[in-house]
Length: 454
Image (cartoon, rainbow, N blue to C red; front, side, top):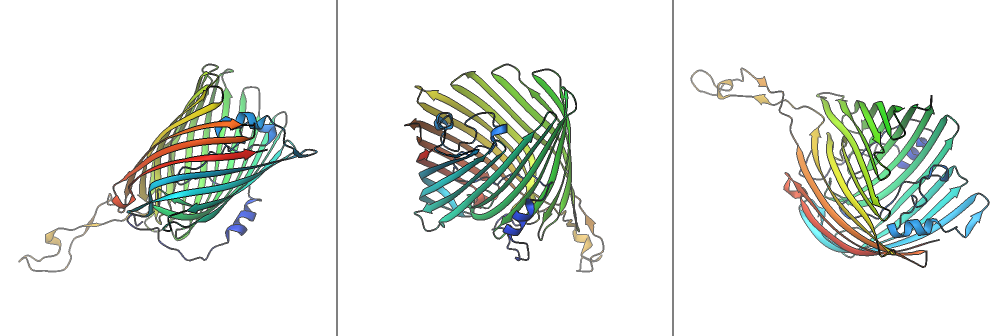
């Protein structure tokens, strides 16, 4: 790993992203990796869900929060039988400072992002969404880009069985904290989740996924993983589960690895206003190849939601895990947390505030042993230079490590006009501190967003 420069380039002897994407449609098991953290604030995007599994009418909206509730209640004028088409468009304009064009070189720019979206509901079981985004910078040190996002989701349920399938593809050129520059990435994700209810209290859930990552000037990575939970309903408010996960990671021109991840989970609906979910375990990851090492680390995911009033929601999320790094010969160990507040004001406005942070440690996948040499090892009895006679190797001399600490806070105020138009203003401040100075930055963004949806 080279923590002081750009990710090393790799030859292009690989399958094309399109071929891997199409192949993923037939794959039933795969993997899950954490997404890289972008520097510039992105518009909110909720999970895509078919109508049969949609728990809230506004879940599919990617517009400002004030719009989600009102817009989702309006029938689309584009409906043919069981097929419903919902087009929308968002234009986002902001000014950002302190964005790194390359490690150690911050710059400022006005940024305009124009994003139409085409959402298609096919009956109650299938949903498809495609959204291109044109991103334009006024500072020529940045490159204008055309990003793409495609998602397909399907869900089927019976008395005892449930089945959910999802396929996604994304192409972007965002500035990332990890690389400290604009980084072209393509990803193809495939997931299949199966659930079976043995009794009214006992249920088995199996989630299988594939994640294909293609990164400019960095090793491509393919991850296949499975996570299985045996869930027991203690009461109407409390669920306990034991789980086991496993996966295999293939990284071009770097070390492949496999991991095992046992764990436990608790889900508690403490009151009608307070809910909690917590799962944790310990991951054992083994890196293959010459000098490969083992890495054992705790894993955790937590979420807490509190709604003291109908117009107020407070939430907390936290996590800890290991994922593939964009640098060759490394993985990232990440701890992250976020506190979010959503408050409706004067019946027509929604104020959202978010405070988040985290730490990232870059760990070498190969253990490099460095000789522990003293002066007597390279001189003779008279003190003259001689041959190396004794070499002791230390087992703790792993080289090339980097540590980052990230903090950010943001505010968003939005409202809905004429049931279809949303207006929002936002502000975000973020800071990354690193023991590799070139990867540290401090950035501020302020802007406005205008959206329209049928």
